[in-house]
Length: 323
Image (tube, rainbow, N blue to C red):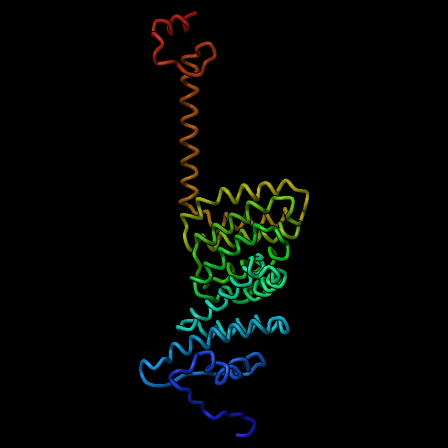
């Protein structure tokens, strides 16, 4: 079969490191995926000979090297990661691949933070964080739920920096995650992140485009949380409604339209008959309590004071009423 390239199988000794196996026997094949090739790597051998351990190491090294290409092929690398994670769905390789991405993210965050040991690497680390955030937009929803949870927690910390370039990438990533119905995620962590966004959407630091996009994201995100855990979503709905209500007072027409649409979607997705009945019952109870208070005030209007003091002698009360 002309046009096909084959390699002679390699044999490594029992003391050979996983790194050497990767560099000499797997790296070229793994990274050929970056050029559009279909690549397959597998290990075979006796039981307990280290096949699974070797493949986990190859997976992590492959993810690391793909990220090294992000600087030069930023568009292709996230898509390649997407395809790799997509192929790992439902397999034991998804966890180590997801961990490889998360570990790189954590390392670049430390560099961007300017730790004492690597203070000179701060600017480089900050740029790498942006590269990883670009990649996460394409592949976060495909990662293991454990790694998704860790990344979302880092997202919340990064949002507190109020950096437009960072915030835009995070909200884009969240939007893709929330729009994917099959993406499994911790509803508690996602809700906590959405509440942080809701509290920040009305600040003066948020642009019109930012308010508009965040408003739509809140609608999509709260719908996602509701589908995963109705109870915790219902508890936080008032916070989101109040945050959106504050933005309605702005003069930005586009943002107002987006928030109005978000209100409609939240009401449609998150407020069912049982919740409406609960709200109506609360209103009825409040009205009954107000009526009782008014009746007491009309019967015992003690010098304009609202209620009769239980310790007031009945004779004094009657005398006051008969005046």
